[in-house]
Image (cartoon, rainbow, N blue to C red; front, side, top):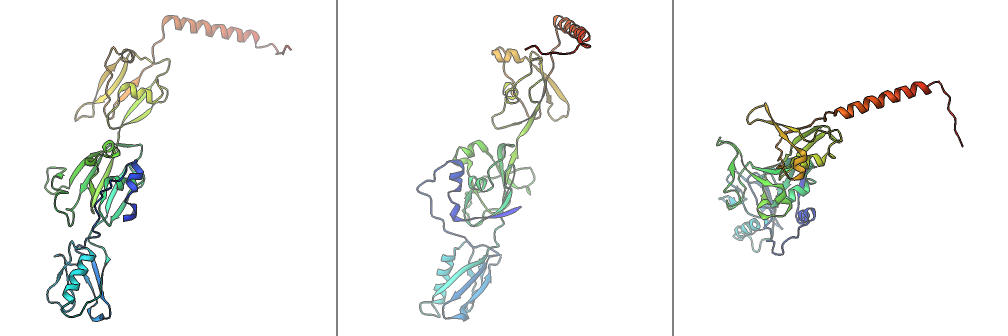
Length: 329
């Protein structure tokens, strides 16, 4: 999978992709927060003996030259860490000029998005990003996408106050299972706040594929159709594939539906004519339904007419078979 980096320059990408406007009171980001595994480089102007390169340990601390106690670096920004170290250096130097930078960011795994999106990929998050932004970066969803998006939280967010993952639920009964949430794709596109969560490093986003139904028999274009959010009725499915043929037996359309927890199917009959007249309730389709439209049996009159017409054509052809052709102007 390709890797992408979410930068502050694309803050408005989600608004462009989904036609939304950003609120005027967007809070200012504090910047990257240091975590275990990050490499910190410090340089003191004119005092190279105080320069250092340190890796944040598992306790979130770094070792700084000439100081007995380690400095807490976890969940501190570069600016905050610079201020902390400058205060310590003030014991040795007058007005120390120091730069502190995170030279390697290893504390956070990338977020991953895959499934029915145009560009499945890993995304390195340098700041907070929302689900809408991640969908936009991945090129949006495919036509095959269903109505639901599942977000797995593989690890607790670093440097959070706990509110962002307090009510995430485990997907199975095992305590080792990964907590996850389900979001409606329709709600995401409408810009509903509750359907646009913050995505954190390590999160895995799965855009689920829609379940199909199959329409066969005397229809214009027999094919499979994806069931999107909100469902689909029998008449909608038939309309999507161009309608029925003239020979179709519309008074007795059969729907073969899987029985619960079984591979066997039950047969449901529907009178398409009565449904169109509003005299019978339209049927709501379920995943993997097979709709079969049989060919109507010919009436006795149609059969006799075809026989007579066929015989007449055969006789006429034998009579004119030996004659030449001419054109009268």
